[in-house]
Image (cartoon, rainbow, N blue to C red):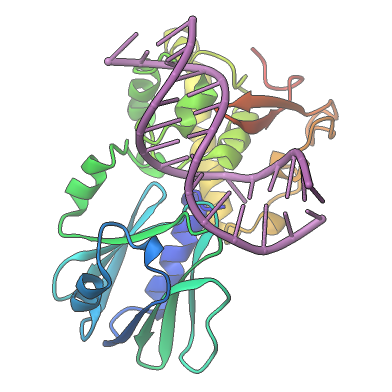
Length: 263
DNA sequence: AGGTATGTTAATTG
DNA sequence: GCAATTAACATACC
């Protein structure tokens, strides 16, 4: 599930409960989730040290280690951060568990596509991963640049982490729905002859992502009028009642309303 | 048993 | 070089 709002929520959870404690045991239960770092090196970087603050870029969460360095987390398809009391059993599929005083911090990942690593330099980390600007920090001018630079469709552009970081399948559909844009449309055509469309895209990206964060990234708590409750071919559109359609983009399914997302 | 899943990356094709 | 497509990764769920 983890797109920008999910990662933001994980970061806030961690910031609220896992900072400033002295780290005890570093229990790597499954080394497969370690990203180019050995158990030894991870333990040396963490044990006896403290987490100082969090920072998010797109779908990546970075956690500064007070004594130096940053922990990097990416959540793949199924990973999340769990913080609980030290005496409560970690959830199933906890892959890395840090002891933090009375608490324990878990990186949990059923499918093991998530990754946890270390970096000394967040900027270099972002550059190495070829990440574009974070979707929430992109202003109108930034959007024009992103769209102008792409020859792909607007839906592919939104999901391309190298162009703009943080938006995946679910939220690209939601944003385009509220911005009333046809996902198949060429990104560049927006800058060329649809300034109002560019403005809607900017505005709705902000609105949708912020609102999703407020809802704790839990779809059940998001507004009833949102498309994500109707992600199935033939479901009624929450705005016009027309049929939601499926579009296949890059091997996954995207949903939109041909009735209200004009070409 | 087979299809599906909100992500990333490499290989392939046009 | 760019964009689109496909497969692979790994695993639980329906």
